[in-house]
Amino acid sequence: MHTGKRYRLLEVLIWTKRETLFLTAVAILPTILSVGMGFDWLQVPWVPVAMLGTASAFTVGFRNNATYGRTWEARQIWGSIVNASRAWGIMARDFVPSGPSLSDDDAAQFRRTLVHRHVAWLTALRYQLREPRVWENMDRADNREFRARYFTVSEMDGQLPTELQRLMGDHDAAAVQTAANRATAILAMQSATLQTLAARGVLDSVQHVALVTKVAELLEHQGRCERIKNFPYPRQFATLNYWFIRLFVWLVPFGMLQEFRKLDSAAIWLTIPFSVIVTWIFLALEKVGESTENPFEGSANDVPITALSRTIEIDLRQILGETDIPKPLTAVNSILM
Image 1 (cartoon, rainbow, N blue to C red):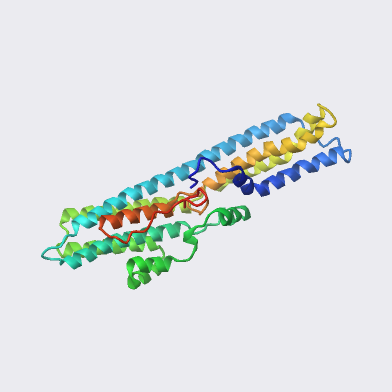
Image 2: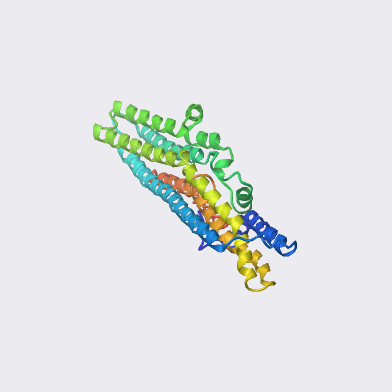
């Protein structure tokens, strides 16, 4: 997530460098053929080009609106995860007191287990959400270059086993690592611990139901994240948008040739810069939609799930009264992951 007022012009130019070079070549080729080689027939009436541009604008607008909806829904889900996590921490602290059935040390250990395991769930979930999918865009050269220059994604460091061991211990971490869905496995462990506490009389029926309901709520939030992650923006819409824009990009210089030829023989060279400007706007808008459609892929426009997870961990550790509190994550080059 970008936390500044706007992307700097240099960042935008670096991000769209390859597209700009491509558009410049597309504009130069017909201009050189027409002026330098006398191919005056290389021109297209502006009306069909304008009609195609209108259709392309509609498809780009539709896509960007839909992809923004995916990102906003993802941010709402993680807002709910933040609230549910805080409630979980408070209930874990207050529902597991020491007493006849539980010593002070055992009660403290159970509270730590429930809270630290929840942080492990957040960790496993964000690592799963950062795993690449074939329809995502972070393997493209321009996105790799931008990421290497401006920010890093901690979930791509392969440190999940170490993180789980730190939060859960070797035995539970090893068990989780063998699961197909590690986040679900951790919530299953939470439910089993709650059952143990209820069987020992630590939790009464109301408290047990409240905590189990909270586990179910977390599973619901996880499932909603997985739906966004595993179901792409429909490929039929993305494909039509892709080809409409490319066709428009190729035709614009041919339409511009005719318009600038009407002004003056020297004015025809203005075809190149104006074609680049017009087509760059369309390709940049398409690129914005493309970078918004997958809110967990590890781009500069992602929902900042790493920072949100750290915020939750800080809150939960403070609820338990711990002193070894990690620092909040800060934006690097105005990008918060």
